[in-house]
Image (cartoon, rainbow, N blue to C red):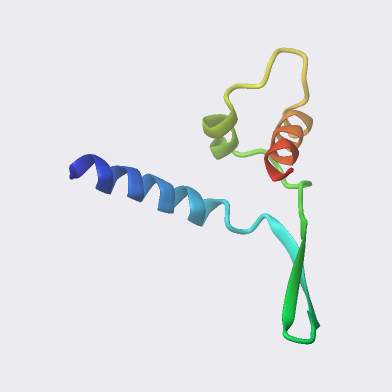
Length: 76
């Protein structure tokens, strides 16, 4: 039971910290259907959370570029 609470707490904390990655959401309503299109903002600065999620940046690579590519792969 303790492990579930800890896992849920970590998940909610991660969700709260990464919640602002979308720049805009466009909703298109056609009849009774609603379609949402989101444009993610991948131009954010790297943080300590990125290192925890994706690991350390390999030598010789730019941290912003490395983490941006990782986030784009996740979004696909």
